[in-house]
Image 1 (cartoon, helix red, strand yellow):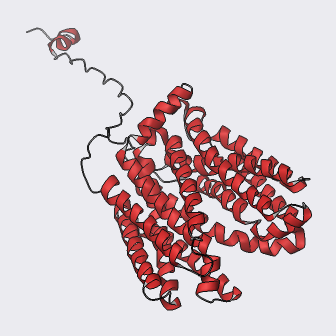
Image 2: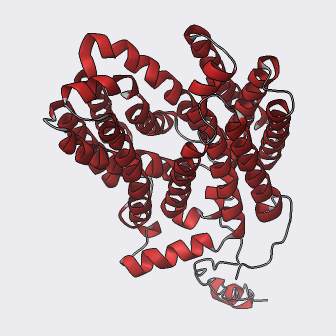
Image 3: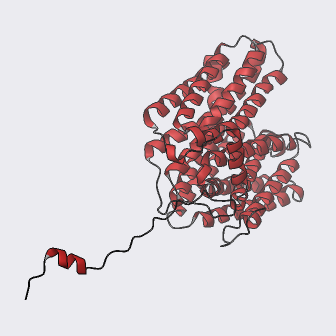
Length: 439
């Protein structure tokens, strides 16, 4: 009996069948489900700290110099309306900048645009410090808003690049704390600085914050969008990507949820000085206390959201936040329209509304970006532009009945809450397993 050779044994073994390689999946169409990583990823601490700084520069630039409006008017020999125009142009630049820089970051990457935006924001701040006239300041404020928009819109895209799932929702909740507290702290800080350093010194502080932001991006923030995930093409490709983003029903629903909720909060911020003082009869000191307490409400809601997300799905926390918001808005409407705005009801309801906003903002943002992870910069840009657009629309509405009525504020907040709830439950439909493909 012959001993089998290695060659004969190998010949008897079954030959493995070739396994065809799976073709690369095409980009998801408007009716497909949103792609996303299989495993949850957390945001590195240094990235979260840099993004938090990026998101704070906008509120600081908007609110910090408000107490110095009279001084600016006097020093530059101009009208109060012209000084107000510096705020309007900044907001316009912020909205336009998000629409331009967000999609552009999907093509060129995040870090380079953040560096250019932060450096330009610093230079525009220096021009505001040295401005010889209100005309120069108006132009500089537009540039400051446009370039500062990079921090907001690309910062959200960075979080979407490096995180997913509950971790992303927790990160956006943390950013919501910054964006909720900064508009309250900034005017107080500006008031404290107005006397010692003047309005030029306040712009110097804003410019210094922009310089710190530039250094933080340069030293601490890596590129989070690799070249293989970037979009190629020019304006036509950007437009096509925007159409794909807006074609995702759940994305649109979540974005309308968060932007409408933000509009309701902005209506409160715009009306609070008159409502607290002229309607509720609070003194200047108690006004500051009430305003700060409501800022703490947003912090409490965002902190609660981060804790709840350890056990609950972001959709559950968002549903709770929107439900609480519409409940408080209905109760506020009854308190103002029927009961004559009793302080004992209005103040607690406002605090609960702020708390609901803390539950809503981070989770709605995370869920929206999750639907368009293939174009996070564009998705973030659309959300940011809508937030500022809605805020600009509601701001003049709260003063329609004069400075001694809380009715416009209550009505606008109720309308905003109704739109937010409708967008969540009728458009996004987070608990629906299947959605019809958008037209």
